[in-house]
Image 1 (spheres, rainbow over the protein chains, first blue to last red):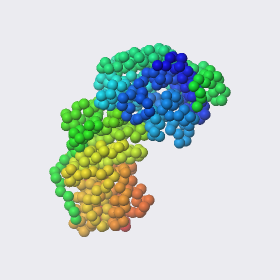
Image 2: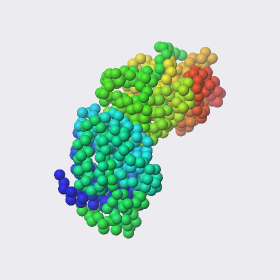
Image 3: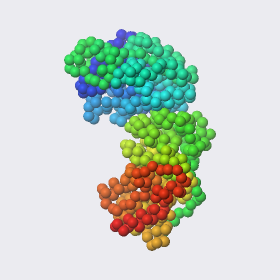
Image 4: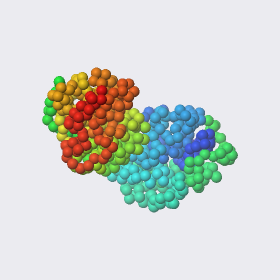
Length: 281
Length: 317
């Protein structure tokens, strides 16, 4: 088991990867990616029980589904740093003929990705299907998924949330990235959603909150607790309170960097705040 | 000319139910999902025999498509069941991203397609679904003509790896193709030999095409009849071989002429052998309430309409 410092080091490198990827092609979504860097690193380094290599069916291991596909930079960086494909391939992000499409896909056969996402609101249903397949296969491993808070405005989520509780899908941990931001501003100004916790609970889920969603120790502790609550007849939801743009001071606490790349000067500042740890790709 | 005997009217959706039941007994990876229409889709027997492999989703078709996509991850072969309208237009983006673009092995099984749904009216009578589905890269599109063929197609698509749209209907119609036939995806069925005109039909219009060919034969016109059950991939060779002999063609489908079988056939012909063609299809319109027979007559989708179209297209040669 890695210690917290090792995970911090990976996270610092992942932040560098994210910045460099979106800077190179002057497009992509750094804000939400940075906000979830600690979560992804914790998930792939510690929380999930993963097999070596990649096969689509993923029998005998935990699986992860990213529903808010626009945070592909953090997903790709962590997949590469976890050994699914060479880190050099991060150089091809969003370029013609790449496997690292703007939004994640299975179409080009990128190892680690099991479903396309980008059009929002679909990932919860897919994760539930994979969870049901695990049960049919007698596989006791878990399904993890990640969703944006703004993404919960898509109605399909609520079909899935109702189904999961109604049908006792208790081998899933769905995490909501609660950063309070979406493209047009704060979620409270775009479409106030009230208490997401109360809504999930009303639908019959067990809900856990991780107040410090950018603190690796807090994430590990919260997710371990979430795991202990699976298998008890109820789906488990984790509300992960994160800061968009975390780790790059001028990108934090704003929706301005949702879908905007840094310029050369901004890149230099951001990289200076996150010194190389594992080696740049 | 070769004629076909109606073995007794049956609904194509019951053919689906029978095929699914057989798959339940023979293929342990087949699972079924339904959005609150078990009786309409004739899924009862599969559910009775395989309760653990059935997922009642409730009235939530978007969720059903996503769950089906997820079930393939782990090796299951999901068959979704609801009306054609709710299987396609309502959930187009879910099918596009989570199933087609993700290349998931989901079988989208759609009943109550077209006008013959009848009295429920236009909200439920989709006439655009073939177009919607054939435009999705990688999607196989099948529209079966009778009970026996629907049963065989249901069984066959389980062996095909990749997403499939299987379209069938509500009313009891002539059942005339062989019992326990082998269904070959993408291979047209040559039903009647003829020399004057080719009739290419799909779905409920195949029986009407056979009736039309019989009547034309009595008038001294020799019509060739081909059942195109697979609209994508289209059996271009069967069509081109036939028109090289007959020099004209009528396409017949229970669907809008925009986006349907007729347009797929026209594309093949314009590229390889430009040929006069008439279209039996709805003319950019919604349906309405009525009995199936009344609707098919009002919208020009029956044997009489096919006969007139054949006579017209022969004159254009």
